[in-house]
Amino acid sequence: MKVLIVASEVFPLIKTGGLADVAGTLPKALIAKGCDARIMLPAYPGIVDKLVDVKQGPNLGDPYGFGEVRLLTGKSPENSTPFWLVDSPHLFNRPGGPYLNDQGRDHHDNHRRFAILSWAAAMLAQHGQLMGWQPDIVNTNDWQTGLVPAYLRTWKQRHPPVVFTIHNLQFTGMFSYQQYLELGLPETEYRLEGMEYYGHFSMLKAAIQYSDAITTVSPTYAREIQTPGFGCGLDGLLREKADHLSGILNGVDYGLWSPEEDTLLEAPYSVKSLGGKTKNKKALQKRCGLEITHKKPLFGIVSRLSEQKGLDLVHRIIPAFVEKGAQFVLLGSGDPYFEGEFKALAANHPDQVSVTIGYNEPYSHLIQAACDFFLVPSRFEPCGLTQLYALRYGTLPIVRATGGLADSVWEGGPDRPQTGFVFYHSHVDDLSYAMDRAMTLFSSPKLLRQVRQNAMGQDFSWDRSAQEYLGLYERLLGRSLSVLE
Ligand code: ADP
Ligand code: GLC
Image 1 (cartoon, rainbow, N blue to C red):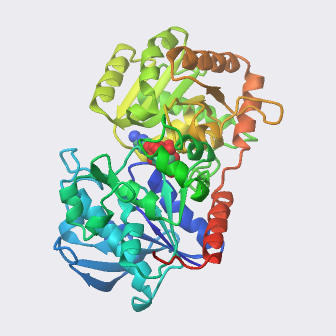
Image 2 (cartoon, helix red, strand yellow; image 1 turned 180 degrees about the vertical axis):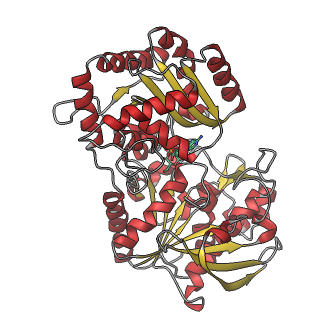
Image 3 (spheres, helix red, strand yellow; image 1 turned 45 degrees about the vertical axis):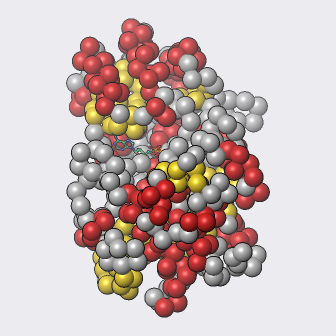
């Protein structure tokens, strides 16, 4: 089966969050199952140099006057995963990140940039036989690829089925009617039953409206987004589409995230021999200038600093927990307000609290390995990957019961051994109580070791998730190919 995965970020080429991890690993897992999976990504600066075997592909012309669009092909040097790059220098070859310019603001023409990414994927889906490779299935991801099914649907020809995976419903890809008019989409589809969204145009809504199937990254989030509290104004539409909507929990690339093999750690360790974990803790305390001790529980956070992640709760209780003898290490970036607040806190407690603002992949591995507990108190969390990594490193996650956090961490029960701590309300008292339970466990080394072993024994490998995606693709292909009204 030929599968095209379209995404705006893919690890290790370019990453701002979990989407990149998923888009980098799902294709590998599908290939391992015998699929011919390929990834489509914009040719951001430097991407071409990170691939091997790069070749010029077809020139797709300049459909809407934003500059010429070419396709390039290449392979990842690590595992030969094939790539299609959308090369449109005018749109993608510029300073800044995939979404923000070097001033930290949205690129002014994101509607054009991601319309062209989507358009190029739709062209390959529709006319791939002329370009040497046509997918049987297209799996798009988040709003940046939301127009793939919109183009295919409005071109009114038979086309491969499109799966749309929602990694975060909060980002709706919202633009104005004037911007909509630039993108070659019919004016008749700018309506409530089409792509219009509260007086604007939403690329996310377009994807929900026109895809053949919608997935999201955990079963709980698939249910949550059908309610007003989590639905971002799209819960009604998602309830209408409930028969086409399912949740497939993300997996972990244990090739990258395993304490036995992780070369980014101070010392490797395993479920059978946990000694290395203490060495990592010491190394981290040293690196951060914290008091070096194995007697204090160390709580870690690696996160985008945004409202979603609920870190304001953590911020409010850190002083009380420092009093109780806890230490904290945070690595994150995002909202300048949170950055400032956390930095001030670290300045007040330099021996017990360390805050690093920035993005640092290797350092995130050391934090995962060195800490005793890992905090993910999110208000909502479609899946969450850091708690899955923390489980494997025996760093017990403390999570709020929402989305993928609720589907992956348990505090015990008749048929599930404890792997972490779960609280229910986004409230300091609830988080505080969960952290107290963690502190109590920390003071019983034997019990702590048992729970660590439970956590490290969990299997969230991609193999299971990829099998579920494959099952969905097969069901879609079993139906007749999408035909347009
Ligand atoms: P989200 O995608 O919502 O940010 P996830 O938990 O799904 O949350 O994925 C976040 C990914 O980004 C993880 O791989 C995590 O380790 C990584 N990450 C987040 N912040 C940082 C940071 N400041 N430095 C390094 N890695 C980070
Ligand atoms: C999004 C979500 C996160 C999820 C990730 C990968 O960024 O916020 O919960 O794990 O996508 O699917």
